[in-house]
Length: 457
Image (cartoon, rainbow, N blue to C red; front, top):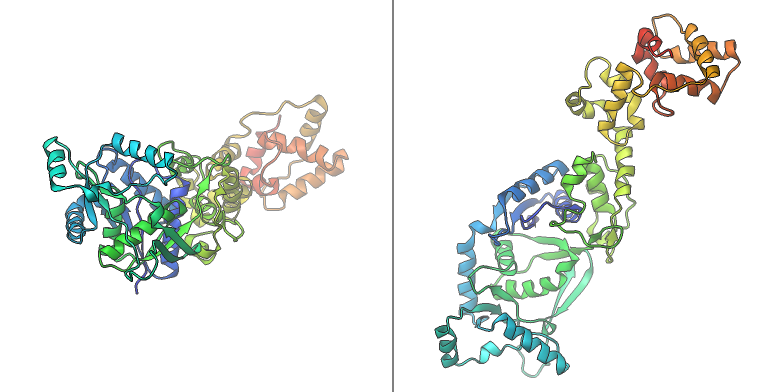
């Protein structure tokens, strides 16, 4: 069996880190099983779905390193769903209901007062042809519900309404269909809710594994029943835990909370996002993987916790720094060129400054310091100014090499008696305008003697 997975968001907003977690779980599972990844847009809600959101989702996935084998749109597949509806009607498991929302709400309230679960009582199944004709003459159009099954055909056995499956993430799972209302699959206006198109597409596209958030566990019980009603074997299901904000709030495409777009614009590396999105809330240590192949080696769906996990953006910066500090020049070269950092100095400059960067774009400030001098010159006391004047008089002649900093500070120490911080800090401030940063032994050869002398206060 070829492993086939799918990521099926609705294109009604920008995807956030929680959506990316689902996409990455599917992508890494496909990678580890040499499978296929289908990008499917649940865009049956024509009013809210927009192509610009679908395009942005694809862009975000590509940025993360996910490249679908195929992209599908449910809005282009209505004929297939229509045919499935006719099959369910013919099997007498899809039935017409004429209640208004107000009538349904009243019935739920009545059931609660009687101590009964507020589920639909299947009153539509008892309608007479005369009652149906009356509703239709009043202009009412039906919505269509799926008749949840009783899985016991033997009249001598007690009724069994539980659906069981072995969850890829959570192990043994069960949903009691008796606690649920028969789900509406088709609205009064003929449009589809999520449930039926999802099942039909999974069948038609040969999806073998459905990996999604654990907010779909109950829905999975319903969908397994629909798979069976359509004569199909359900796929393997896996439900990973959800991510929340640090304060415990849920993530939403509509609010833009922790959107992939905002993280990218904030200078976060895609592998920092991917590493934290996948590994948080699992038994694996959260470390920065260099690429998705490496991350796949740490990925195990069964290692995911069953409880929700808080996503702390501050952890992204820790991972981002790790990626920056170890990024080879070949990987950074093109992006540095876009930032105006190029030429013979670019590689030694990158190797000198990368250990002090939070984001790649932070290199621009150090490039300016290297080529233009301190952007905010320090204000030195008279004693430090005298020290620096004496120090610059001792600056070695060219040619310079990797030992020039050691040679220079050795002469300064011998001439002034200063050592440690009183020696190094005034020099660092004069050369860079900052109290910390890359090793001056790496920067000085790049500044050159003339560029260094230009920084004399």
